[in-house]
Length: 434
View 1 (cartoon, helix red, strand yellow):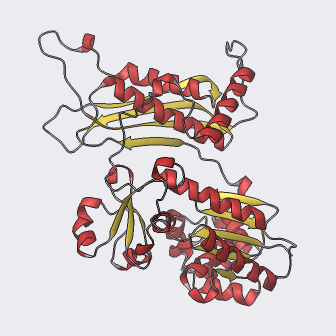
View 2 (cartoon, one colour):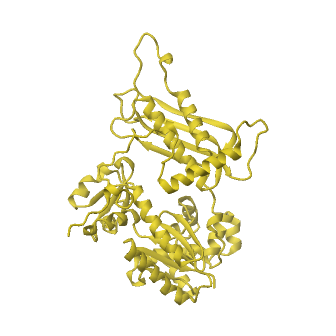
View 3 (tube, rainbow, N blue to C red):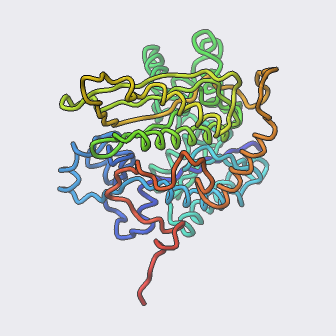
């Protein structure tokens, strides 16, 4: 029997903070975005207070203080460490594990027992992760990945499922879909939701009840696959999901912003390096790079400057050195220089509040267009990149880096509510008094 499981960590970022702050169980918790800008994660208790995803921190500060909401700056080092522990446990329960995101993974449970046996199996997985790592996990089990995601939502919402919801019969499928809004279905975005609503489709059951011919005549093949999955026909592979067509890493800078050219270049170099890492993870190459940087758009008392320029490389690449070098070349070509300032007035100091790098014109790693006049030994470059990636995976993020990336992170985030790196830094290890 073909069965898939979807393991989804409940309110993952908030749950990670609670692991080391057990006194926060049952109390409202929120996690903030970069530079403590806005709310990006909420516990169930925080949701009931009316807090929404994306709420600016300064606008809801009074609500947080009045209701004694625990506030944390985002600590991705801690979250990544706990995610690895969870995925390691999940890998012991299935011959194939597909990690979908930091807090989600698909398990292939096909031919491992009857559906009811898999229900007990899912409860066991959820129980072990909660006991071993401290993170509550909801498991959905169904004949398709889309139905499994729907099952995980029900497991998260209703305690009676004991951490695992099974959708194995047509009766259970119909009941689950009838109470599930179409906009919450995996693969159905906002624009598509609006189109479906205009067609009178409100629930997943409404969509599943349409004929295949009707779906084909109005939507693309991706939407047709979702329709088939809702009807119990498995046709979506995690490996076949579309790659990102653009990759962006950007950041707003704390306080007044950055005025030092060297610090701005260091920041852009790190953003470009991170983009290149993401590119390699999805086994792609890119041929176009855009760099942007700008001063505050809300201040009239300081000089304004906006940088947004692109470069097309002769050959698509995923090389960290090439991408960082190109990004810096683009940035330096746009930065004001002493020569560009008029001699009859002093040079202008710009306070850059945000910068970023975007990789686009992305294609699969192999094959890609070569150049007869290419001067770079691509095979040697690839081996070097793979060696650096391997060292960084074992020794820690950015252990080996380009010199231009710097070593002291002079553009660090504003993180006033950051928790300790309990699982990755020996100086932050928990201390117990006996």
